[in-house]
Image (cartoon, rainbow, N blue to C red; front, side):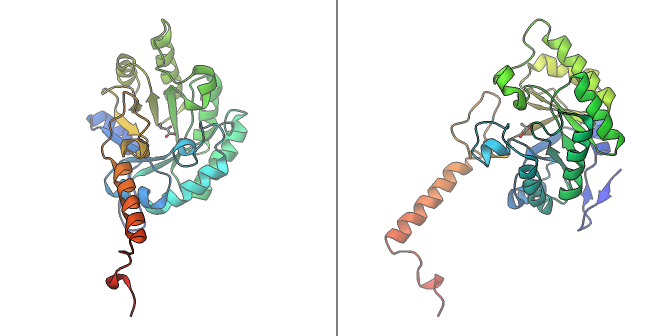
Length: 274
Ligand code: KIV
């Protein structure tokens, strides 16, 4: 059920996540995009590290995830991999790398696993076409995490809003969740859905649900690292708790450096080589 990492640490596997759901043990997940943060997140005991295509907004300064490329994802995932000893590493397949055909999806997902050393990919949506793609990847030995509710790659169709509030919403989301499970996904993210829908889906599917803005009754919770650390102070959606104010600390530190240099107080004698 588990594999060993380079230093002998036990790696989290997709089977472990299913077992955690069975035991009712909450699954923790955060994003990471570089080596040092990945190491920090891994050492804190997070179960699943996601190299999310939220990379577009929080690292590359883009307006959405749509311009993020497969090469961007691979570049960052390789750095993250070097910092991860224990967590299950999942990488997002970006926009248009899996929607065109299952064969293209297979080639691209295969590249992700081969070139980064990640264990799984994540893709968005719950249509029949997406389910067919999931089947193709899983048959080739690539574990797939699904993503339902608000799917950021469809932001131009849906806008950023809680999904499933229309009359047919609860039935539709449950049907998509069952389709993803049946196609072979090992887990799924539920983003921006009412708590009651997340509760029903979590109870009705055998694979773990990992919520973001989906209430407390999912099998696990995921957040974007930079948001939960307060590195993106303007961003405060209702579901987000800031677990630290790293942005404030960083600003104070940088300001202190500027003042110290301007006032010729840094470097001092102890920082200077004889
Ligand atoms: O890209 C991302 O960071 C994600 C999480 C919000 C789940 O998909």
